[in-house]
Length: 165
Image 1 (cartoon, helix red, strand yellow):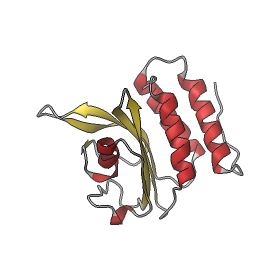
Image 2 (cartoon, rainbow, N blue to C red):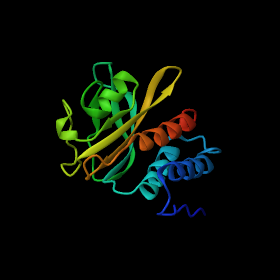
Image 3 (cartoon, helix red, strand yellow):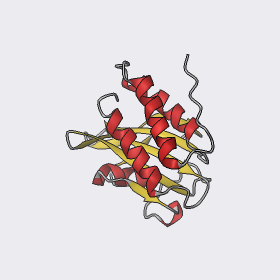
């Protein structure tokens, strides 16, 4: 049994280094993508303070044969199940393949309010062979909670997970 608990006094670069190390330890030998996403969502929840949602949306198909994001493993309140590509913060990350760092979600065009307590958000695409396969989504009830250090740490996590989810 693992007991992954971060030191609360860590700076962000060290916190994300330890988060990535823990995620690597839990996912390196496990071939099941859902199990890996579930464990990583739990680790993010443990390691990153001031969150009200942390998890994954996976690329999937909709009824008309197009792509959309489909809810994956997460921690937090129940969430939107399907998000169209290009809609909201997650949909923008999926469409552009670029990290979205949003200080005030209420000012973001097309924001989807799954939890009205959310005030800021960071969404990082997980890319395989130049295509988005999933996004890592973190929400916080604190405005401007996320910084470039958070984005950098989560982008490193996404690169490590690319062949594990």
